Image (cartoon, rainbow, N blue to C red; front, side, top):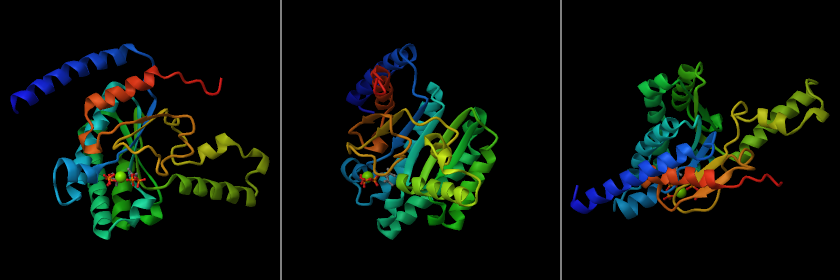
Length: 261
Ligand code: IPE
Ligand code: IPE
Ligand code: MG
């Protein structure tokens, strides 16, 4: 590490410690953080100067494991990340295959991870199962089965996920219950719809964070994010630092959540 970098990292270290203690003394932490992990390909091109965007995806995978620790160590008990959207299937085949393989490896690693079992983290894969192949689903089922008894923390990974599709699936389930006489139309309300979503038993995210400077949700949790606080940062996902994470949490604590009042 050069002198400038050393100085920068020490200065950031001190700043992080200060931010961390402000946050722990500050208002309540979010109960559920949702993250749109965006900017891998731009990171590969602009920061790594790599010709292959896959190099950015590999760095993005490492970052996810880091961010999970930041979140749980701070005491935020629910984390949901957007790893692959239903729309991402329209990318070139080799990129789709590479990404799904990388996510599958992540699931295999997480289900064996010491920290996951020590902290009693329940892993969940959410998304359109029929868009994924058998190998992938086996890894997902194994990660979920091995942690299904835990409830201290929830870590949800959205893969082949689309917010509109999730609502359509919930509506189909409800419509079937009505048709088969298990449910009356008058019983359909927001709570019923919520309970038919993939994470019906977890509070909705109260903070959603997107990296890479894009200011949109890209079909992520559109039902659940109705009243979430939004936080956008310009850094690309693989370059996301602890200090950026802490800034997002502090920003959340400084918001006035009025809920229309
Ligand atoms: C996020 O990075 C990963 C996925 C969407 C799967 P991108 O691959 O979208 O990278 P950018 O946003 O084009 O830089
Ligand atoms: C959103 O990122 C999906 C994920 C982060 C998995 P995209 O890069 O696919 O979104 P757009 O294309 O910028 O809307
Ligand atoms: Mg992107």
